[in-house]
Length: 323
Ligand SMILES: NC(=O)C1=CN([C@@H]2O[C@H](COP(=O)(O)OP(=O)(O)OC[C@H]3O[C@@H](n4cnc5c(N)ncnc54)[C@H](OP(=O)(O)O)[C@@H]3O)[C@@H](O)[C@H]2O)C=CC1
Ligand SMILES: O=CC(=O)O
Image (cartoon, rainbow, N blue to C red):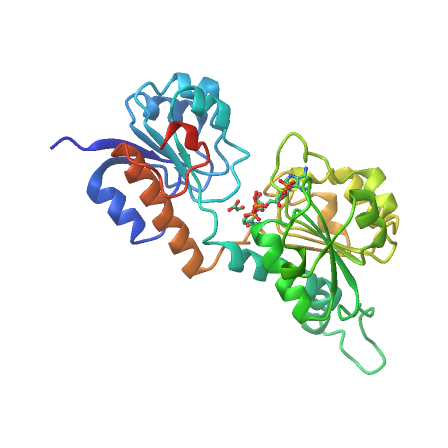
């Protein structure tokens, strides 16, 4: 029996990878650097399935070179690199991995806030650097208990972060475009964007990256925040205007930032953000545990194989082409 041809722009965790290799004829890009556009176009000529990754732009121009494509899947919940309208126009379902990474990403996001508020990485560098001598200590952090956390983007991950914050005795306010009907259950109170910026002691960003959220946090927004504010971004780097964040941290408009995502990604070694004392940056590891990356890989393989078989994807973004 002829196998479907599949292009993978990165490796997936086992056993999902073996499942795909057993069922499909696979071209797999294994190098650390992103697959060159020309290489991807060449591979997609006769491909039926594509497993994409965040560093690959899937747009109208790419799809023109993929006339046989029946399905695209990606091991992530965010899909800002995928032109969904272009996929839908061609009848190609796109599958992502919502749900399976919620708790893991919430752990990392709240962990970033906790590490930032208690200056943990500064403390570790201090001890490691041999500076821990009598009379010498790092600058003090901030209690989370009793403080107000503002979540911008109270979706699946936001709710899981809020649950953790409640356990730390924080008051929670949030802002979405649409007010939630389950506020009593999640224990959060709605605020306009401006109200949230001015009231919150700590702000956590968890919106998707879209035209509306690109650069959502700029000079004006940082100027509205408390000078003592802790700012955490675990959504996408481009939701924040990086020069504005740099300026806010340098000039004391806010106290501290903790980022799991940056713009650009990765940050070049000489980037000015890396020279600041009041920042903690993780290399986009929100979902990076063995258990969760395995679950994401399994869901991605299931999405791919369902699409190749002409069946509904377990998690499909553009359901109108896949019912
Ligand atoms: N760092 C990491 O490793 C990870 C990062 N992520 C990022 O987190 C994002 C959120 O994931 P998840 O919680 O699963 O997604 P959800 O879709 O469940 O939640 C997104 C929330 O953002 C809100 N939102 C959307 N647009 C705006 C806006 N313009 N202003 C304010 N709020 C807005 C939505 O509410 P409404 O529609 O009412 O506005 C919704 O509540 C992903 O899109 C991804 O970019 C996800 C996983 C891991
Ligand atoms: O950034 C990760 C995702 O799942 O989205």
